[in-house]
Length: 366
Image (cartoon, rainbow, N blue to C red):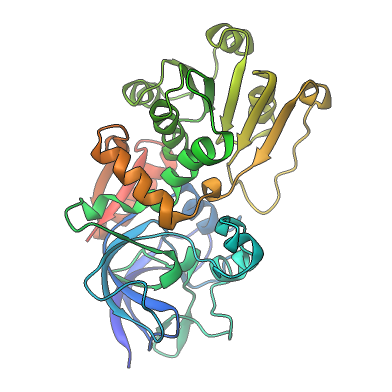
């Protein structure tokens, strides 16, 4: 039996999505249907829509969803109809990396999150006889309802502002996890964050919550630098600051213990490494497409400096998202300050605001 849903369907790379009625089919094992309350717009959605990530068309994007479980497929016992959930990426939960607590590096990550199809080749969505590709990061939540992977659904308390929680499942989780799970700074550490989008500000919030003594943000937009200071940064620099490397070393007392690179250009990544003291560690998290060749000065890696690539914060959303919610309840993780809401019908406006940087984290509400 098919359920009719209203979804923002992207017909071709580089075009605007069109909201129209499509259908979901019967749920398969491990799937759930979620009535969306809100969904964040992530830079990765923009990257895919432009064709830099080869997700098949036509498709429904969106992967920072939150909502209420409407129904569950065969064998699903982790959630029930009526549960409030935050949706994160899909993982098999059984490979070596998943079992070891690293589902972001699941052996089947690409197939489960980027292929647009189930493992049997079918799609979760249709428009009459036409296949519509779904399962983008295990959900495709630019729609009133999403067929999602139960393994990526995190049950949250019903008293929370559900429509605002979706970005915890990707962008904010990525930045916070890079700090809290990968870099693991000691109390009083110095951290430099390059880029003050949602991922970078997630890192700022995490660094402040972890008790870092110095948190410096680098970003070209004044509004984002001001927001970073409100969220816990101790200093914020324009990326065009003359002699920025020297200034960063001055602000961090000779070099940062850790840096987070959310931009991932060659210039920024090299600055993120050269800014470190010895030893020091950099987490690079930006996704610019399938390939992003960069050259790093090997001499800057000597004396104990390191660079680590990080996907989805290297976290298990089932445990990490509740941890972030606990910090929010305690007043130590005010992520909502970076969110601006838009009605789902205004998705074009929201996408433009995300692309221009006018809004840090647009969230579509239903």
